[in-house]
Length: 575
Image 1 (tube, one colour):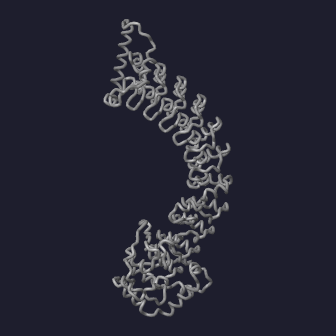
Image 2 (tube, rainbow, N blue to C red):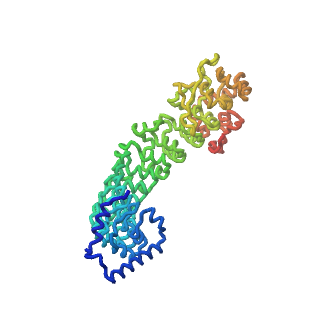
Image 3 (cartoon, rainbow, N blue to C red):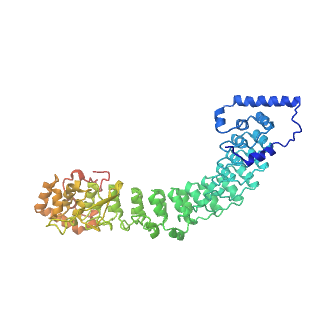
């Protein structure tokens, strides 16, 4: 089917202004025609664009001449009868567009003089003027504007020639376009203005030029981002300083409710954060529902965390209820954000500055235990985290750390620091057979080995009999018995352990009275409490007493936790 184009139709009239009086030609005209024909044939023979490629994209000789810059052949083709100067290829490219893209200024001039339309665009809606700006060719731009090119025509992304010029940081072209009437605050499909584009790419000279010509410094994109927030995102400090000098608002929030201060913090631009802190409204930060400290902790921006702490930022600031509800764990503190992201060094900075490890609904300690990070566990315990914290879902009548511990050395460390092992053996059905239905546990995050129970309250024997723990029940029970006195296990655990190779050792421990020295040690530890146990090595006690209190089991086997000369845990020990 033959395509019809109004542009091509009208170009026939523009390109044939000379009135022909007769079909008869003189000898001079015939000689000129022969010369033109020879030029055209020479172009066809010498051009490296194959004929098959030309045919597949519907190229004419005029397209080839314009693309290759053969000005003489192009003039000859333009003189030929019935030549369509605006003929388009399958990619909607005119000879003028090809000449501009290739930078052949003479061909551009000849085509425009022959009546080529400077506003016909390609399939991406890019005009010759847009392409000339893309090539940063000032002479082509001026020539196209002189022949009436539309300065505000948009491409398929809604971008104008000024957007592309700003991106290239060409101030001369910017001045040329604005003098020709370019809209200085034109918006593309995402509502990005040329000024926002300049700030995004750090084009400080162009940015200054646009502001001098009246560009709006506080206009927002469809995401609510301003030129200032884009400069913060990409770390363009010089552009940010220019914007601030021209009264850019540092307290304009994005659609997500974030200030430029949050954006700079997220991307780790410390110098920009230091510039924004004095001019950012504390009230606006509170209204956003999230402090820069939360953002810095989550993205492990330690320099910014240090800067915020030194400036007096409250390390226990909470997320707003609206922002907290976005997370399944309902996190509220910056400390939890750091632990959740595995940023242990950032967490240490927060704890040293006074962060409370027991504020969040779901304890950061339980999260660290679930991740199996002994370094984070030790850090939290040393700063007062409750080793007996219990989650609300699933509820349990024993310490929550047992629900999430996947490494025996982590569990061993927690028991050393006061985790309540006695509550694991308080089953009220210990002397009778359990006739309960099997308990089902649904994995919700296998990468973190977390489990959620379908029952409202989980008993220790139920948990141990679950499929996730049954293979390791012997090692866990054997370890727990070192931290309790005389206990009696329920029948469900007994049935489980009888199939375990450690059953004989466990049976011996539970059937015989425990040594008096062991019971006395447990009583001393009970009186000390978990908070003192976590810092037992700092207490003014004789070394023999310290060894007695800490040495619950002389031989630690595979779960041994080595200690340095200062009594701190070696956090690199794993099972």
